[in-house]
Length: 361
Image (spheres, rainbow, N blue to C red):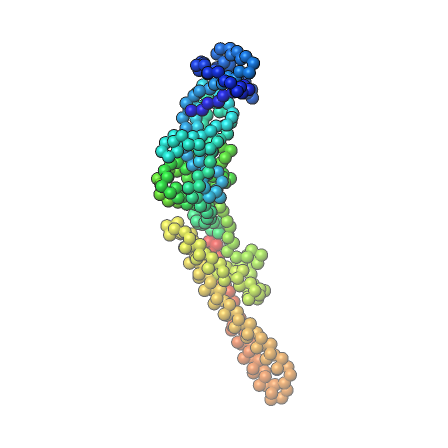
C-alpha cells in the first residue's frame, strides 16, 4: 500500500479527524502530475488537515538485484508495477516487511520516479548482507574452422568470455536479477529477461543453496597465419646459395615453429572438423623432413666448398713434388665439392616440389 500525503502547518491542539473523503482525481501534464480533490476543504487559522491524494494497492515482487559485478552483496529491491490508470508521481517510499520476522518492520527507503500506467520499476531499498556474492571473469578461445588459401591459413575462432557468479543465499529463496554489460560484437549465450540503459538483465531463481551462475558471451574472431615469411619471396623461385640457412630456416615452409604451431592448433579443434589442419600437418611434416635433409646436404656442400678453397690455395703455394700432391688433393676436393653440391641441389629441388604440392600447384 503506497500513500502520499500533503500536510498543512502543525497545530498543538488537533481536532478529531473527519472521515476519509473520496479519492482525488489525477491529471498529468508536461513535467507534473496534479491531483484535484473531489470536494473543497476549508481550514480555519491554526487548523491542520491530512489530505490523502492517492490510496492504491500495487503489485510488487521482492527480489535481489545486482547492478555492479564487483558487489559482495546484492541489493534488496521491489519490482513494482503501476497497474492503475494514472501516473504515479515521483517521491519517496518507505518499505515495511509483511511476513515472518519482518512483519511490520521497517526495511528501508526507496526513491520512486514518476511511473506511467503499466510501467514496471525496480526500487532498491537496502543491501542484503546475509547473501554472499563473488564474481570472476574468464576468457578462452575455441578454434572452429581452418582454410588454406595460398600461403595463408585462414583461422576462425570463437572467443568466449564467461562471467561467473558464486552466490550463497544462506537458505533464503527468491529471484536474483543481474544487470550485465553489453559486449559490442559479441553474442550473449544466456537468457535475457530485459534490456535497457542498464544493459542486459538476466534472472535466476535461488533455492537457498550455494550455486554458481556462468554467463557467457561469444565473439567470432578471424586470424591469418602465414605458413612462411613472404619477405623471402616465392620459395619455389629461391636459390639456396643466396640465403642464410641458419638465419632463414625458420622463415621457410617446414621450418622450426610452424609445424609445432599447426599441431597445437590441431589439438584445439574437434577431429571431425580438423580435416584441413590434419592434411596440412601431414604435408608440413613432410616439408620438415625435406628441409632437414636439404640442410644436412647444404652443410656438407658448404664444408666441401671450404675444403676446396683451402686445397686451391695450397696448390698455388706448393712447388715440385709437394705441388703434385697438392694438385691431387685439389682434384679430390673439387670432386667432393661437385658431388655434395649436386646432392644439395637435388635436396633443394625436392623441397621446392614439396612446396608446390603444398600450394596445390
